[in-house]
Length: 125
Image (cartoon, rainbow, N blue to C red; front, top):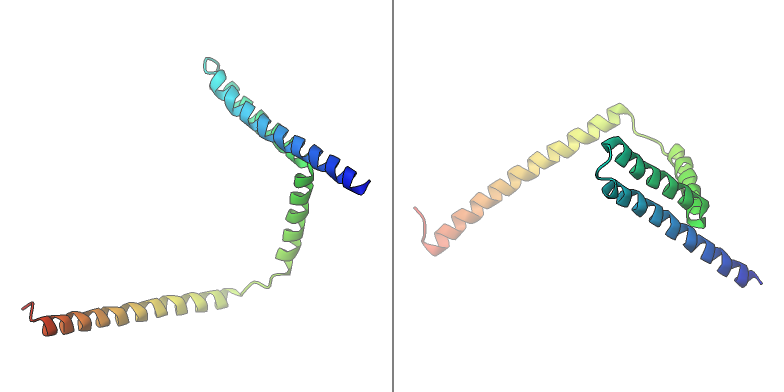
């Protein structure tokens, strides 16, 4: 019996997801179908299709899972310990400093390898 209910729930979920997609596509199709109408009316059709599609998605099981994911994400975000402004500046300065040092190192390495290549091959002036 539980499998039958899950099967029906999956069918309902699929129907709602299909309806959501169809409503969005219908809104976009209406934009092009109403080409002779005012621009605001054409965009209203797109917005209506997206809003109705979002409503159908919200009623689906996938929509409920997405809402639960959103709430859980916000709760986890509240637990994050953000660095202070001083820590952020210090880390940024370290990264830029390291990038400059690495750039100079590779520039010198390139000069050395170019010199060694010219020496070994006898090319260059």
